[in-house]
Picture: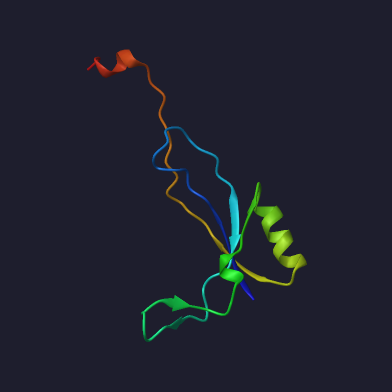
Length: 92
């Protein structure tokens, strides 16, 4: 079974750096489209599971313990906050 490990991004509606946890989840593999209503359904319930970890190493260890193959997704577009005072808005 294939599992994905990635770091969650902070909420866009909140200011600050946010809490970034590592998430282990499973991608959708078998989906069926209902012909009558057009709804998507599946018999596989694993994509509904999301497990959060404090570190990437904990997530990898948990996946290896359960025999899951992992794909680690690294995000390189980290947003950095530059602290400045209110008076710096008026200084050229």
